[in-house]
Image (cartoon, rainbow, N blue to C red; front, top):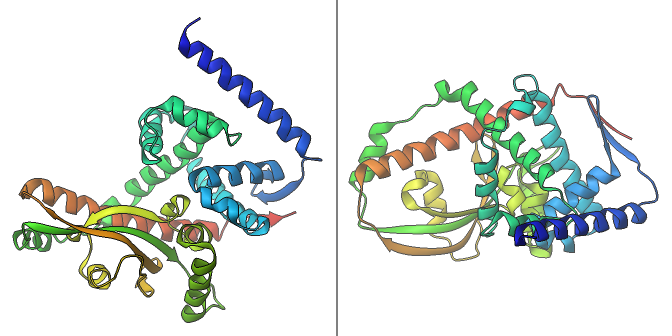
Length: 311
């Protein structure tokens, strides 16, 4: 018997054992939520909780009721996206990016191989096919948004070229995290900001990103990673460049809400200028920024017409 077959059998055994333990730990399956015609149970909430904890281990320290709220919000976002996507895509035929997307995903989580990632997820009672389904929804959503709005993207190429030409040989780079939030009708910006700050003080930035942020980065604790000064628009750079490590910006108003940026680290890096490569990178960065804004606007629009009922 080959090593790979033995490894797969071990995974199956562990998964069955965990499933039995899970079944025994639950008194009964309870309906928690209805979104259009789809029913979500306490098991769906539990699986989503495990998924979010797998991505951000700090979440396990949160109170159960708060963690359940985060899981609920995450599931609602995912199901609304899927309901909309099913109008345009056949999910059974939408696996063309599956392997590459999964590879990019587990590498972002610092796993070197698929087997390592599968083993880790089994430890949280998660099935790799369910993970693929989640990634498929996000991939198809991004594809749909791109197709809908690419013709509305406006890029000032001359401004980008001018910025590159004045670029210094030594670039500043910033490791950033974000919380992108919106206000409900009865909320005031200062009250919401203070609430988020208090939560950051008590639970940390990553957990607060999971709780408050509407950005896709929220699942990763708001982490953006390293970006250089040319990848930031002038207003954002102005807010960030004077921060000390671990400091936060005040809320920055953007078209999709309000943005709080945390500076995790910074460095200077000498860089040999490749004009064409740098230009393409900056154009792509600006396209993605605008597409993310369109994505949030479109999501909020369709959410208003979705039937959601708590049981």
